[in-house]
Length: 269
Image (cartoon, rainbow, N blue to C red; front, side):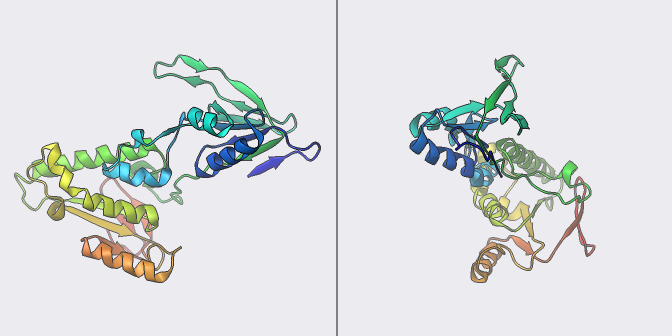
């Protein structure tokens, strides 16, 4: 979303949000107009390529090594960088307020600041929408941030360890994982988890075999997965997922999520 004054030509462009769109815009404008005219604002010091979060969640990528410093990018591409969370926008004064930045001990590193603009670009990105599904916010793990990806990885590791221990007493014990959303991230996560199964033994889980003890179900509300892509790609992807042992459920809407169950609108669990 862009908020622009209608009086003088824009000289100070402030872009809030350093995701793919905001960062690319800042870099292009910075190379043309220079750092005195272009400022990028983000709450984090590093840019993370969000489509790679599924790899971090599967444990096949160290997301912290993939981050790009906004300060470094600002130096290379000729824009200024201000770290901090957007607190407010004053359209009459054409000012934004950026919250203070504290360290891990709660000590203030950067103070609360005001930045003036002639043109303001809000490139804040998106977050997962649970569509008011009961229990989803409490029990589901999203992949919106690096913290989400790390939480998912540790939750998976803990669950695999529990199954590994349980198989001593119950050989049929297994881990059931439900991924809701058959878009690119959901499909790639399902495959990544399956293909990363060979690293499980490195964690000292002698009784857990992912090909035998991990059951993945991919749930999609639309008639096919990857619905934004041509149908032939959806068909090929479904075939490949099935070959990998991943169960694909389409035209399936989730009605409730509990601590150990996903219930669908047609009564399945």
